[in-house]
Image (tube, rainbow, N blue to C red; front, side, top):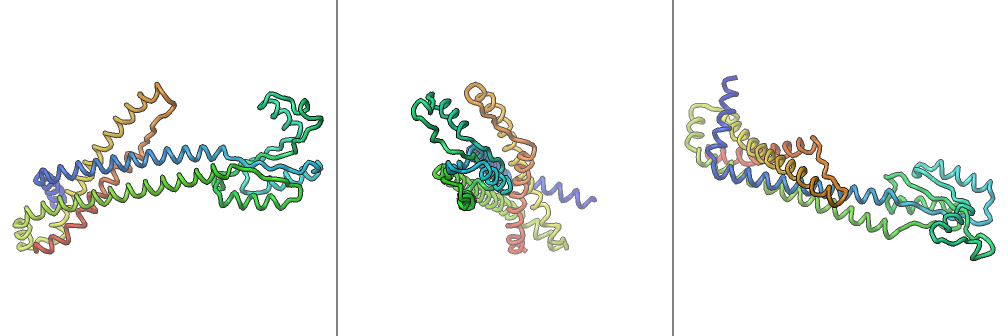
Amino acid sequence: MTVFFFLIKEGFKGLIRSQYAGLFTIFIISISLILIGLGFVTSRDMVFAVQKLKSQFELEVFLKYAATDREIEQFYAMLDSMPEILHASYISPDSAAKRFKKEFGEDIYSILDYNPLPPSFTIELKPIYRNIVSVEGIIANIRKNPIVDEVKYRRNLLLTLEKYQRIIFVIATLVFLFFTFVSIVLVSNSIKMTIFARRELISTLKLIGATNTFVKVPFFIEGALEGIIGATISCGFFYALTYVANNFFYHFVYYKIQLDLKFYVGLISLGFLFGLIGSLRTVGKFLGKIG
């Protein structure tokens, strides 16, 4: 237990001794985590907006005007049995005429002597199937039915939404990888400078029989502490940002930044990992040179 507390104390001492190098590393880790967090929140909310637009995506299936009630019932049963379909609504010619009057302000019968609007179905797909590949497969299956005249959907809108979804994912991934790399490299350099400054002490410890683990652990603790402190600073930034931004947006648009406990725990965990990986990357290599 005494050895454990000694190693912890040495880790804290190393952080203090590193001075400007340690402070600079903490600063960079906090900035990196802030940018990663901003990228996460932005991409999350943009993906949510895309998903919300996709939730309004529907297929319109127009049936042949001559379709009988029996055929329509059988077709509805087929739609109801398809696992991809969340909900299907039948629109009769009379209902379509009422909708026409509501949307355009004119009675279809005052324009024509008959109702040319065919029976149709509005289909809402389950979220997992709201993509171009699944949609085209579903449409191909629906078109096999002989009473189906035409299937309409907003193909260009779906393609655009999927394109932006991919772009958001790629950008968020690149931002995360870049700042992860930067943080780990800077922690490594900070630990490297600390090891170099304490090379005589390390050599002395090895001469009197100190194990590699005994020598390495304080540096691991130092790196982890730099990461945790940097992450704590970034958590403070996001807490303040959420408070200020939500009060600001409240007066203009209905938008609220929502950050739960998992987000803050994730930042602390990332900071810890950045610091630990950075120290692991350096300690073995440079202690070997000193030894």
